[in-house]
Length: 240
Image (cartoon, rainbow, N blue to C red; front, side):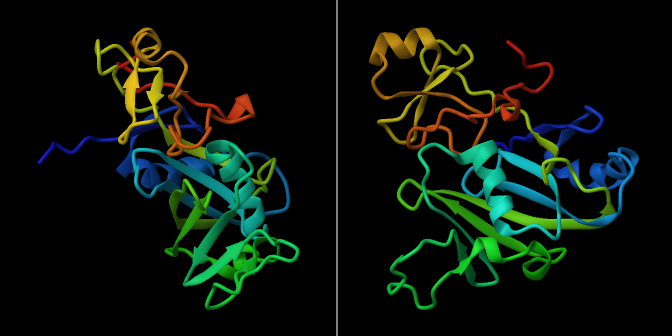
């Protein structure tokens, strides 16, 4: 059995490095100490998000309880998932929520999915509740989400506040052991390479850039379109 590897990340409120299993406890104190300003208090959910098959990728978010699942879906796409405009869905307590499509055929479902744009978080979620998200029903990236807390506070700018996220995993070139920059995606599992050895072996065919997301190496994913959402820092002390 391989040794368990601790995943570390960064608190975006105070800058502290945190082990994954300590983030929720840290944020319970750090969030109130970093209130964003004055404004009418409203109900906010603290969400934990991680890759279902790659839990070393994780996020902590704060989002108003009054917004819709569609707003949360948009943020997850923007920061971690969007490549080619694929469909997506949440499943919460056995109920499926998808983007509403005019004329879509849902006859193959036991029960047609509900529309994300009509489902507010406060009506579908509660503290302690776990749910899932899927992006791309072909080459699917699945996420696990949990409501780890709620509070009354100032509404985040842009509707979602990024609280913390993982440092980029330290993947190494399979040839020389240098930090990897690309993945060869025509094999499974995808193989990491530095730029030199990936190009030497395959040219550009089959190589995708390694990015800090559970969708890395899937479909045509190359990272967020919005560069402000890209985070490729490595764990401090491991910055080769």
